[in-house]
Amino acid sequence: MTKNPLVDLHGRPHTYLRISLTERCNLRCTYCMPAEGVQLSPKDHIMKTHEILDIARTFVDLGVTKIRLTGGEPLVRKNIDTILRQLAQLPVELSLTTNAVLLDRYLPLLKELGIRNLNISLDHLDRERFHKITLRDDYEKVISNILTAEQDEFFTVKVNAVLIQGTNDDEVNAFVRWTKELNLHVRFIEFMPFDGNNWDLSKLVSYEDILQKIHSEWSSDAILRIEDRPNDTSRNYKIKGYKGTFAIISTVTRPFCSTCNRIRLTANGKVKNCLFSGSETDLLTPLRNGQDLQPIIRQTILDKHAVRGGLDDKQFKDPGEHHNRSMILIGG
Ligand code: SAM
Ligand code: SF4
View (cartoon, rainbow, N blue to C red):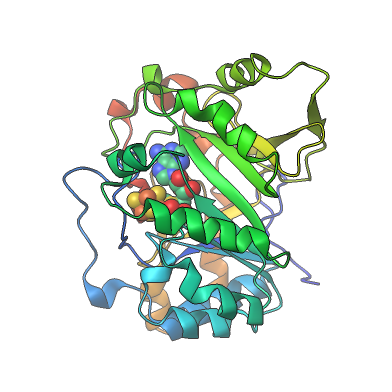
């Protein structure tokens, strides 16, 4: 147990680190990757394997107990096997967020290393729509990899669907129906504003909208609310008798900042103390200079705002006035 954990000025202990392993991706989801692409960091500005491990160890010394790997697409990182093997040695719950295109190659290794929790992005249950949002033809591969992981009781599979008005808002109930026979946890995510993703409020499918759609097919008696765990960002439900569950992540209409325990580390070694924070703290340069990272990390956590990176509702919903990285360069 760490003597002096990372508690911010709002009393929130920070025990969950998300590490982005790469800025690259094999899909081009339009809500994440700007149409014009992103300016990639020069190769020597990206954390090397031993640097990821050094920084992760520092966080573990500061009380981090959960690490989730993300990207870009973490499975496109060349030496992902080595990174997974090394991080799996740390005393943390290690998990992965992936688009599942390459997942079949890595399922045996993930199992060997005890990495059970997989979050998989899938926004459409239709091949052509999948192509339209990802600009790639990997629908069959992704579906087959989700089903393979679901069939293996070792894995807990969450399916993340970002809902966008006029794009997939009419697929909510199809996703819920999917949970009838499959032990999947579908999570509907409100579309969030980031640089280059053409967000505007009219494209939002809100928490209320989602529940309304579900109530149009199932009676109130059949829709069961499941108790949320501490620090859950989702409000969890299931349909009576169904194998799987569904949940809503409502960052826009019902933020859950009061229980936030998350810290994000970008692939080029910057810490973001909030997904929406406009500022970031460089850890990679001090690490390369042999400096002690602990005081730098502590200060970054102390600088964390109470709600959504210090943006008020108007600033948050008017992204023209606020700049953040594109999501592909943060990692979710
Ligand atoms: N490539 C991996 C994947 O797609 O799962 C990991 C990285 S991706 C940036 C992490 C998560 O962020 C995905 O679940 C994705 O759907 C979500 N995401 C990306 N852009 C988003 C946005 N504008 N609003 C809400 N969620 C977003
Ligand atoms: Fe790639 Fe994931 Fe972003 Fe889609 S959501 S472009 S899969 S990083």
